[in-house]
Picture 1 (cartoon, rainbow over the protein chains, first blue to last red):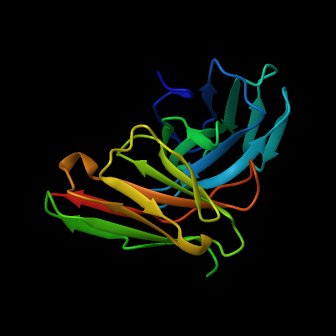
Picture 2: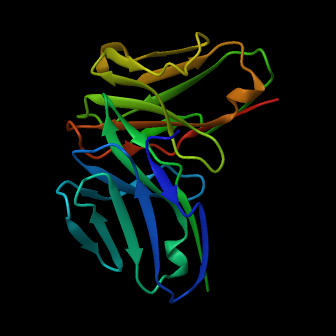
Picture 3: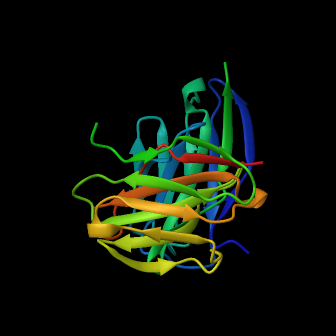
Length: 109
Length: 113
């Protein structure tokens, strides 16, 4: 069983559509991060959420941290082909960062 | 370029050979992480250094894997007697803050034939 579960595993949408991806756990975290990874590259940090119920916006991306700090969501408004990639959530656990399996998004023109 | 750099970017080797990967972190970062990523999966933690001290090593890591960070600067990850199951992308990341952002390199892709 993975510490962080992500859903859906794959998502294919048309340009202009909205979407939400989820990151869930049975554990409570002091903070949670979202990364995006493009093929052949390392992950790049999008946002860190630290407060239960917190909502952060980054242009067309909206991130929410659950009230109980066990889950998070990423909502993309009006997806563009440039949003294509692997979206990973990560949390600090023990002495290292643990990653979820990711949601692979394909935004088609 | 002051980002995290990894070398080589690609390595093809035959089963049973030894391979070594190098990671140069962002110079002021004292924390360095190694992860392994297979196709379609998220990064899997391998080991972590704070300065030159290796503070944590995954139980999933066999004795064939060893990592060093002499002088708390660059790090190397060596895999001895490679197996086909070792084929993966090996990612290095550094961080300057406790619980802070991880800055990843572009990874070293290993293919074991």
